[in-house]
Image (cartoon, rainbow, N blue to C red):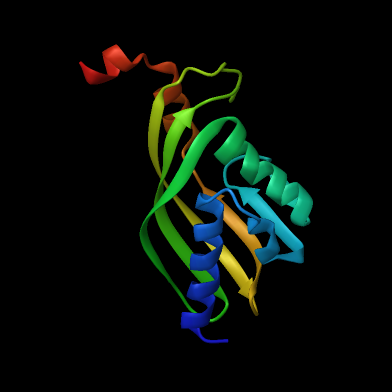
Length: 140
């Protein structure tokens, strides 16, 4: 597999994720997910899908705003913004309806046309700050 093919796999995955589609179809049977700086980890397609859906569809109505995507035939790195609205409980904070935009990065291990691992670098403190700040004070 070439670097271009690996990037195409991740690009297609991100498109399906943003459509709230069947993005788990891109996962290998042994896929792992790790949220850097936390003990949050998953193994397997179902657990990984559930955690990603929690972030994108339950706690937030969110999408990925891609800034850059690069890599080689085995690893692809994403620089993006997590963009959306806080719609459900997150980190003990009930839904606020606040808009969020937080920069983050993901490193994907790609094996053939499947994603074998996701390592997410998301500043949770920035995300929590945006959901706990009232929109009026955020605009001031």
